[in-house]
Image (cartoon, rainbow, N blue to C red):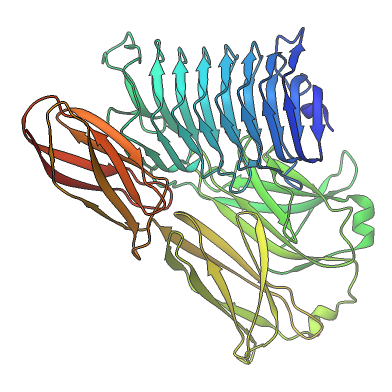
Length: 544
């Protein structure tokens, strides 16, 4: 491991473990930098449980991490107390499906709980308490997370969504002079902030205008007191990807560029000079490179080489282990800080092929941009033909999206079928035919826009006895009439809000009590999430 991952206790490269009941203390750490040791490091593991530990000091209290090529999956972090760290209390870095709950983080220098990077992390952060952080919960450059029922106590910012997407936040409490509830920044999309967050503990900022900041959009000086779903205005500045080898000595460094959408021959002689590919992202508006610390997604044959950019806007890919032959490389810069995303893909031909590609028959891939509905499978047709228009059967089409690479085979008509079944969002599918002894390679990128799925609901009128509990029902189904379970439903009547979750039949049974007699309009609501649209229903309640 590099010093970046050093800790006083480390668990690495294992499947299934429990770490419980320890007191971890890392003394003498006052500043955070890349070489600062942490307390507990969980690295490249699956199905691990970290619970009931007391952790003090170090850069990070608990670090769940990976180098992307071997991600950390399905960790549970619960019932831990973290104090006095010089950076972050709990961080989940490139780790998919982490469940972080019922932890207490006290007085971290920066973030209480930090979730960042990786493809499709889908982490859940719930029922945690963060005290005295600059930013209580920090969701960065990743997607699919939920932040639910957390308490943010005396934090400068409660919850930050920085360059993140498809985020759902509700039932969080901002107390004891926390200044800002939610901070939305740097290319965020589809951030859903439910109506059941409690902002009553936000402090009044001593400058005009004198009101608390429930939700702040950092990109446009926007302030809001209203819940809803937020996305940043579309970025306008374009970017492009440069991929190259650097050869020569310290005084005569020359880039050998690799071209997109074509085979690139990488000879043994070139590999002897340098076995690292440089991937750099440039801005078109001023021809400067991007900032340091921005995620660049890189895959080769489906293996993830993603990393954060350095101060030159670049990441470096070591291809020492690639065997002779053809390899498919993709690059995606997601776009941050008002910059648009950019993509790049090509074939790496390791070793000389004798110039044989010059006599091969050209091919082309045909596919169209598409729209789909969240969690409803849709098929995209990809057609492969040669230069004369002849359909090519039994050829493998490689496709990559969000760091995941798969293949599909063309039928007798040269058509391969790709199934899209994603949550809401915009996806770019990189399509590639690698070529063979007879045909050249070809490339295509298509955009697939996945919209939230509409839902159906029923909520009936009811008669209640004053000051007595009455069970009322709300039924939630998807667009095809299938029950939706596990979703929170709220009912608001006479100024009071009641809630319950739907069961396996899509039925939420909500206990309602009204303190005075009369006729009231009750509003029942499902706030929506990354898959389903919000819906509300009204009904008349008669209280006798």
